[in-house]
Length: 360
Image (cartoon, rainbow, N blue to C red; front, side, top):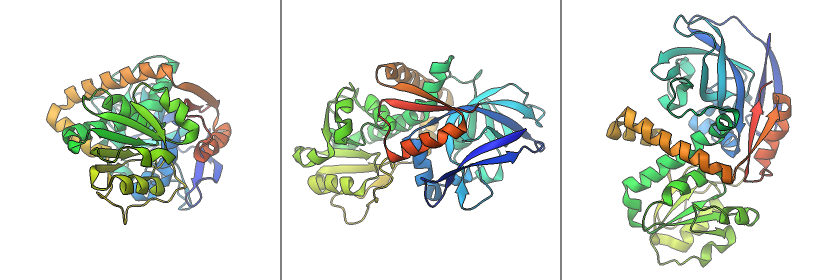
């Protein structure tokens, strides 16, 4: 048996290669997971863009410092085991490399497995977890449901937690939130949660090409193109959440609103080719939002069981709503995934399409 990996040039993320590799015998405490399928989204590309800053390249080291294996959300099944407490056959949701197989040193947990590899030790528990389908409160059976969870669950959870952070701080006294890169799945998840908050106007800010799509989404009170930022009333206290990472756009938001911008949250880099900007901005300095910190706080505040119940209910509702705007497109095999990676990275994928790669 041989493995196949889709690897990314760490200096030029538009350059890829496919690497065949013989499969070794799993070592003590390891399990071999066959990756069934994974989501390939703009967020997956962001893992490469921020790989050095946030350590995403460390999830699944390639053994070659010039090439990396980007983690992607998906499903896998145990097909070989050298762990006495982990049987063959279990299926798990989590972060996997874009590969056919992956060997992982694991420890069983109440709801699945945890990656115990020393290269993962520094990462937050949520990034090391594999949720077993038979113990996962978020699980919904069926291919379409599983594909939508792969595409949306992790992104929605980030949006849910970002909105929860704003709620924790009473939106910093603001009455409006600007959502930059409003067509992204994380942005839609955030807006879905923010839309139920009384007294908060949710404004989606997007490219002219995606304006019609964003305008059709019920979670935004209104949608505007990037070139209309200066037309917003500048006398309303506002917060912003930036999924784009576009320093030029963010700079215009800060310049237009100045001290009326009460908080500037940075999350993603959907505009990965645009230079980020954090110096010389009017108003507050942008603050990076790291979702695991809010997870830890909420687990402490609510307890693990209540946290799981709340996030499970919210995710399932969002997945159900996604049938109205998200089309799942399936790609067969890692070789065809090369073109999908390039299309997603180049921004040529319609915002209402989500790609699932099936690792045949």
